Amino acid sequence: EVQLVESGGGLVQPGRSLKLSCAASGFTFSNYYMAWVRQAPKKGLEWVATISTSGSRTYYPDSVKGRFTISRDNAKSSLYLQMNSLKSEDTATYYCARLNWEQHYYFDYWGQGVMVTVSS
Amino acid sequence: DIQMTQSPASLSASLGETVTIQCRASEDIYSGLAWYQQKPGKSPQLLIYGASSLQDGVPSRFSGSGSGTQYSLKISSMQTEDEGVYFCQQGLKYPWTFGGGTKLELK
Image (spheres, rainbow over the protein chains, first blue to last red):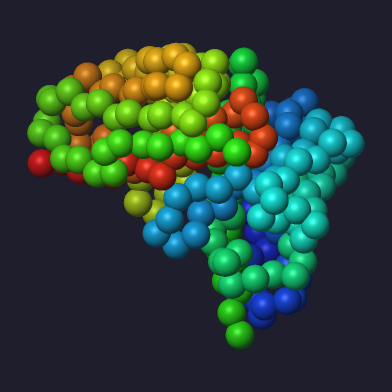
């Protein structure tokens, strides 16, 4: 059974940093692209970051580019999101998701999510 | 960026009723579309990918169709457990984008 378990969320002041982790199990982690997706309270979904199987390629939307860094440790089956210079608009539930491909990329498994609140 | 527009924003349906949700892309996404269901307090779950392929384990009352810029998700017979919010997502071009969501309630 595929499982994705996020951790590391919490309350952080604007301008500070936070690092999220995602522990994966139930599949060969190193064979899959992985991603982070967030959801602001009562809002829709926003893709945040993607990383290739080896970690050599990463992709971000403009809203987080230069502030967030996605990384992975295939030996530990773990995914990370380093978030720097946090803003109030980064307040959201952050989901770790596995990516699959068939003509296009889609998120086939999601974690339960971890809440990040950016506030003074 | 490719904009994804869903309609309606909300709807209510009776048990056994057929429900259709629309998703329009701002440019051709060549069937690079997925649909997700999110129940209150839960993470999204994949229903459909490639515009019309049913994810393993998803009931056959769910189906997807469309091409170009216009796509739809159909629930052939509304059930209690189908209440939730439905999102479409294009995974063809970065940045990947989601529709705003359609809230489905039981009438």
